[in-house]
Image 1 (cartoon, rainbow, N blue to C red):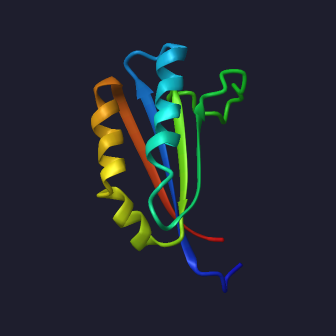
Image 2 (image 1 turned 135 degrees about the vertical axis):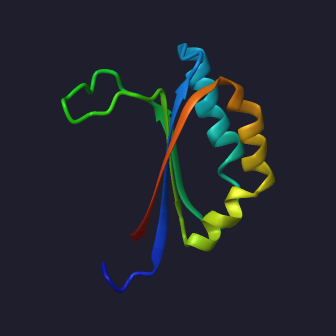
Length: 108
């Protein structure tokens, strides 16, 4: 849809030091508890990796995925410094062995 305003899709893939089902679910729960309030958020989805999907094209090098769509790049930039986002990082970063972020301009 070329006439639609640009949006920003923010995809984050977490690899956990302790990737027990309980720790993975706790991170998913924190995504929904802390990251759904900022203005400019269109949608947020978080979940654990589906280990049954093991096709050659599937990247299995993560434990929890987070996909957030923002109305604009400016809304994404505000989110980065939002107190809830900073609390999310502070509360969870000790269990992150790797974090990969993929951001894309997208049209809704």
